[in-house]
Amino acid sequence: MLTTFTSKADADVIMFGEVASQILALLGKDPQDAQGILTLEQLPAALARLQQVAEQNRRESAVTAARAEDDEDERIHAHDTAVNLAQRIVPLQDMLRRALQAQTPVIWRNTGQRNG
Image (cartoon, rainbow, N blue to C red):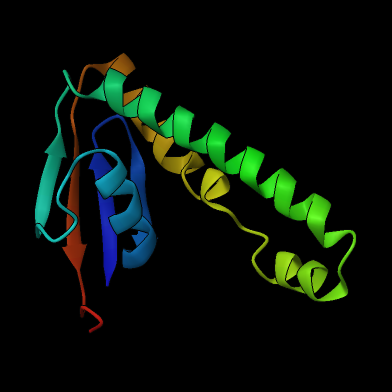
């Protein structure tokens, strides 16, 4: 499944369903909904929440990287999972900022096949 985030303020942001579902849940939205909206009123809180999650994820990644220095298997795993959530949400954060500046909502749609 893919999720497409759309706003008149920016180009579409397309994410794999698993990552998008995680982000939508963090924003208090139901990832099982076929589509939804982040209203203009919800954008500031959504941006703040994504920033909070990104900072927490960076701290956790730093701890994992420090542990990986001492363990070869951990180092390999850390390399394999190098793209963390903090990095994945950057395009959506940018879209939300632009949408807020343009005073326009962000809409998402789930497309494609669901796994499971």
